[in-house]
Amino acid sequence: MAGTTHTVTNQAPPLVQYDVFGADRALVEAVERHLEPDVRDEGRSELSGLGRTAGSAQVQEWGVQADEHPPRLRTHDRYGHRIDEVDFHPSWHRLLGKGVSAGLTAAWGRPGGHVRRAAAFLVWTQVEAGNGCPLSMTHAAVPALRTDPALAAEWEPRLTSTVYDRALRPAGQKSGALFGMGLTEKQGGSDVRANTTAARPLAQDGAYELTGHKWFCSAPMSDAFLVLAQAPGGLTCFLVPRVLEDGTRNVFLIQRLKDKLGNRSNASAEVEFAGTWARRVGEEGRGVGTVIGMVAATRLDCVLGSAGLMRQAVAQAVHHCSYREAFGGKLVDKPLMRNVLADLALESEAATTLALRLAAAYDDGGEQERALLRIAVPAAKYWVTKRCAPLAVEAAECLGGNGYVEESGMPRLVRESPLNSVWEGAGNVQALDVLRALRREPAALDAYLREVGRARGADHRLDAAIKDLLTELADLEGVEGRARRLVERLALVLQGSLLARYAPPQVADAFCAARLGGDGGAAFGTLPHTLDLAAIVDRARPVS
Image (cartoon, rainbow, N blue to C red; front, side, top):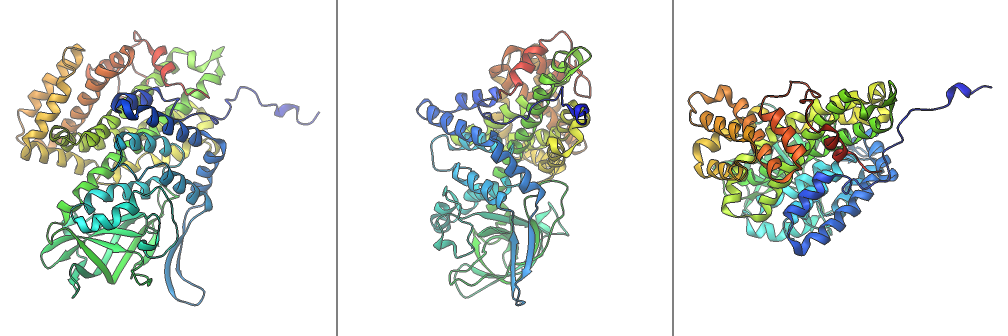
């Protein structure tokens, strides 16, 4: 009777063939809350369609294949000519094409565009996070290009196109284009003012020749890049096309691809500029000011990406525990496991709710909302991305040994989870940016306090946390050494205020108790046992 010992029992079925968007109650409610009635039905329909695509077995397999077959650099062709091309697995192109066609680069010109795109980005990240990089860079390049109306008129229709055109040819001949970014250099990192790449003006107005080295160039297969270089007037932003208008290739020497912990399907490169043609974006010496809009948009995408990873990790953990039996019952019904799952679900919902609120501020575009973003984006980037890694590890532990096995998908989430806290400025950079806003832009703090003040009286622990925060903000002497603690409190209070206003009472009560009231431990699974944890877990359950 060979094989009878191999009967498989007590295993959860794969979490496939479901609507990734529709199964996420917190995300659905946020979209309905922030979209205007005239676009709500259309938004729900398109997001549900993307959600079903993301949850399909075929697309999930594409994600696995893209991760398992990382890009390969080809510096020369068979004849010895320098070509500097990056080859990707077909699944990468399929995923990127789906992302473009779903409008993940088309937020800027349609009603509710940022909320719709944010929700879509959060959904699509759950399939495979690597292709989110070129989607994010392309989306975020628009505000930088708008500092030069002529450039914006030329490039914005290409960037916001829903057509993925992978051909390497002049952008003017393409139906859609992608953007990358190269700001950092090995001697400076986040200190971009230390950049040494030199820009020499050419005879053509606005044209320059670049010479230098970029330590991290995101998405090197893109059609164009925003880079920083030292012009005669100081640090300046430039647009570097991959292929010039006459069809010749620009000098864009890819030295190597980075061998990264996660995000392995996406190419990150070191590149050399040696007589590279570039076009100035904005004024000389205003490079940081020109790209700041791009940086803010990509920082929000870091929040969205982490929220998406959190949601997928929680969905997998709850799904597994809903089927797996141990010690006489379903794991999901065991009090201690329920506590862990509820705690993870709280973190995920708080991240999603905050991220969509920030996207709605972009859609509003008013002065008050812009001021709120100035503090809330770096604070959210700091805190949400920091929480992603411990959540992913804890969620994998919910699957036991199964979660440590590659086929479960959990190791890929764990490897990906620290990424967004590093990209677009690590934790200290975000904390210092918040301090800069507090010191220089009083309207930003006023907008933040108005926002959290809308929930005053909803929960006594939230009220106390706001009061304590005001005390901290009243004394900014020597604040740099405690900046992380202050920014953490800013993010938590903002999350708590949003949940108090919008989430079910069980969720808001548990968050305020554990995150603001001090009635929770340092590890997940330490919520007060008196809370309605079963309702929180049930809300987070994906419906397959």
